[in-house]
Image 1: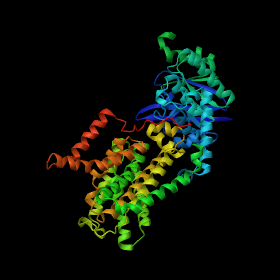
Image 2: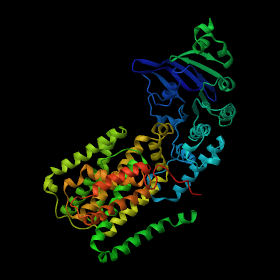
Image 3: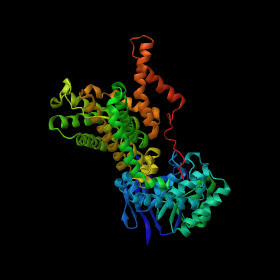
Length: 256
Length: 310
């Protein structure tokens, strides 16, 4: 059964079709790569899945629920989480607080408990903190939990984004260029972590990445996007040899 | 920490008791100093409540004087015409201000930054103009004869409650959600925070306490006039929170007290230099410029939070 299904999704910015007639089916526990040249519409696909853009046509279903045009917070609650291409942390909050904000998603506590500091309040607060700490431990940032987020080195900020995304207990996680700006050693760690998320936490992952080493190594299926349309789809090895893909990446003369 | 938690209610009751005891000796305080103490308390309530909107939630509101006016007029209306008990009138004034905050918040909180500032500024002016023309509360003639109910006890009880509730809000799931909106609204949405709902809550919370502060103010001065609630009053409160450090509850409290006392101290400057010019606004402006140059994050550093205690 497919977990996420996009049917004929079209997103327009003014007269420009950023994504047109996009179909994608992602199965449970699949690891799909989304690649394509700059401006191909990859991030737009993520934005439309998470509710930041509303498609002019098409339908998006997640776990058989129609999520087309729903608010980002509603979609997050259903179990889709994401990271951002240009890191979007909560810069002035601590690392732990950053993750606690997403870890509290499925906890409900009324203002009454908050204002009167009831025993239940402390209990919930403690569970949120524990959950946040587990996420931080997974990405190896537990040691810097009291650091202000903006003071972290770049690679750690990327990791913190992942920790924050998994703390919402998602079923599907969208990673937007997680390896951008990482050195080869950090990239290796990242690949291990992404595999771990899929194998141990049973997450389904869609990944946008320019680093072909990452895409070829860990993705089971790759979708290639150019000018908002899918130009190729298949296993990493199939993709590598397709002329359309080479053309999109290298230009037509390289093929000829 | 754990031990202190157990006594949290006891500490609160102790605080109320201390306020009550000080209230008993308050008739012996020099009336001039006493008035400054009362105004300092009211300013703390105003500043801490605006801080929730501007400092914690990051929404730039300039309508605090409007909310204050609503609370002031409505509570005075209740005590003057219906002899409502004072605490009830205060709460009613706060609730009406909160409701107006809700009504204004729903359409305007979609706006960001300077646009929201202009919209809330407009709201404040609309409220003032309505009061100018509302005959039942005196209109342009003003509203005299309000009973004098405000005393040390009520002012500082409200100060205690507003401080405790803001602090409790800040260190809570809801508080973190509110902070995350200030930090990055898009990321906040993506993490499942219903940003509209929390923005409106912050707005209502701020408006409610501004209304209560207005009620306290009215029942101390015993006279209200719409011209007290101009845009300048909102700016005065804004100066307090920017000077204290946006987002820092302690910083904002200290600066509210400081900026209440400062104009009074400046009276001596006027006498000392034997001038007829009131240097108050000049110093105010200079202070703001200097703070922005030397400590843009405010006196106690807003937006820069302490490491969590273990």
